Image 1 (cartoon, rainbow, N blue to C red):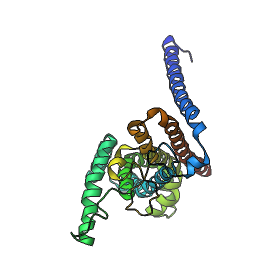
Image 2 (cartoon, helix red, strand yellow):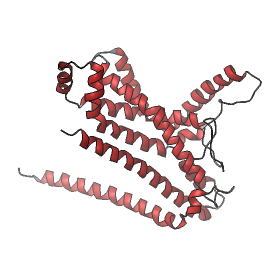
Image 3 (cartoon, helix red, strand yellow):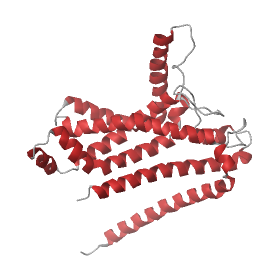
Image 4 (spheres, rainbow, N blue to C red):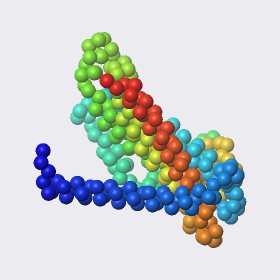
Length: 300
């Protein structure tokens, strides 16, 4: 196969773009680690912040980020996987309901994250939360559920990450050869048994890819949780679903925009960003290991 000048030109442009992306990423990560690593310590990771947020640690923000990510995953991933299974395995090719769901998913994928925050405030906090307060406590008591809380932030991020999980699940299921379904049914398996024992195991690596992307996006989002539960300064840990919480991303935003002394807050800021990156990469690494093991287990 002979390569023309156009092929070499395209290859050169692609290589240059790769070098530019890797170089920019490396410089960014290098600056963050170089300025943030010296400030990392056991006390910084295990203590609560001071009132000015320039002293003390960030443990409440780490705890809040982990709890939020886990709740978001539990609330959003099963719904997204179930929707992808319906669209791929059960919906008729020309089903109006499936067409409506796909259109809704495509529209959700293009909505800015700040709009999800306003939606979470209006729907989860004001409508559902205050509706629960009216039914359970009447009009005389102050807001119990109808206020920003970790549960509403988790639900908002679950809605935000649904399109990624749904699309990747549907595509992963469609990539499973149809002959496997026919062979299983020919041996007497029901449709549900075929789905659980044949289709889902073979599509699990692709589904886990969608979960990885969803968790990565949700763990780093800040705009939606500003309206629905994140606190600027909260030196204690949330112990109830109705509590507000600190978040590493929001803590970075507060340090960079509301600090009275930007130069003094710079080491804390970069150290917090370093912890956030390590936490996000760790969650991704666990998911990637699970995906690799699943893929090796069901490789043919």
